[in-house]
Amino acid sequence: MNDINFNSHHEITASCGDCNAITVRDALDVLSGKWKLQIMLALSKGASRFKQVAKEVPGITDKMLSEELKDLELNQLVKREVHATFPPTVEYTLTNHGKTLDRVIAELSVWGIAHRNQIFGKQSGKQE
Amino acid sequence: MNDINFNSHHEITASCGDCNAITVRDALDVLSGKWKLQIMLALSKGASRFKQVAKEVPGITDKMLSEELKDLELNQLVKREVHATFPPTVEYTLTNHGKTLDRVIAELSVWGIAHRNQIFGKQSGKQE
DNA sequence: CTGGATCCGGTCTGATACTG
DNA sequence: CAGTATCAGACCGGATCCAG
Image (cartoon, rainbow over all chains, first blue to last red; front, side, top):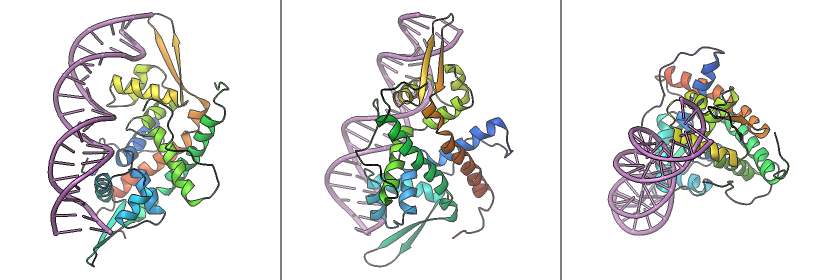
């Protein structure tokens, strides 16, 4: 997955039942994996340095972070700037396009809360 | 990943900067993988039989679909009903909880369109 | 026939160590 | 600090096999 991703060539048409599926798949092609959205979230919260992002995304390894950032950059969600200082610093920031993901992230956050309530709360009561 | 997933124990509080990250992670724990959201989308569109779902999710294998459905059932997003008819049929439907994911899916769909426009459209123009 | 389980091979991910 | 190298293990996909 080291290139800009599209599952196929398809037209943009409005309100064709399947296009819903198709656009979701386009989104998932780019965002799939455990880490991409968490990285985007970390960046949207202000982290910009490599190690800062790593700290905001618990569990990620340097390798995965490096690869995922490269992938996100290819997909124009993240911009990478190297400053030739010492010690060397690299800044990662969201592109304007990357920032539009915040709506998705917000919904995901809302749903995460609902999900936790669901599992912790009414596990006993059956729910059609 | 054959159990209900939570990355840790944490409280539900409103507007604590990190809880945003935490709830997103909760959501991603459950939805991670290439297929879960696509399966949820297929089900939300009305597919219910195993093979129907398989057709709506291009590229998925029977094995993955079977495993993912089990996982989704464990997380109470999907309900499975076996009808002892001949030929036997199994119906998968979204639980009420599963249906609440449609907001997330909708945002994902919107973003998928924006993303395609971004990549196809103004690839030449730099975008700070 | 549908819905799935099992085995096997390949790719992707993770831990640790190391470099500029 | 910001990554890369290496290897082991987990995960995914394909083919095959099984039960109702």
